[in-house]
Length: 158
Image (cartoon, rainbow, N blue to C red; front, top):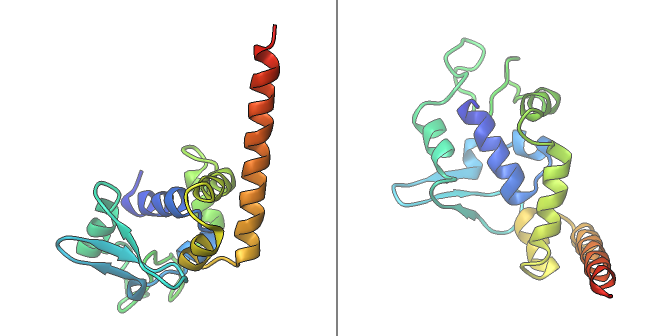
């Protein structure tokens, strides 16, 4: 998988972001140092990316892709597209990632899992979602988990 596709997939799987938001990121949203890569996804805080998931971002910083044409001489897009001054199109990336991951299922699954790890208000603030949206994911993930536990209990009865 090309490095920028891997970077997009990582943000999708780790942070549960919609493709439209990921593709609109610029290099102003990413900080790369020798020790750490951080990214701001529209929330109040930067998210730290540690090895090995920081590697595609380090590679992109060292050797930006699709900046070698006259159409993109000074582009600040993290994921520049093929049209002058534009970022990659969500439909294009969704098709490219389809063989590896289901974009929508991955994003929703990530949000469901994240709601089990921290309070919904904190998740919403860090990821740039509304608290009501994250609360819906928390409720849905708990409901599915409760259904699973009930099914296991019923199956275990003699």
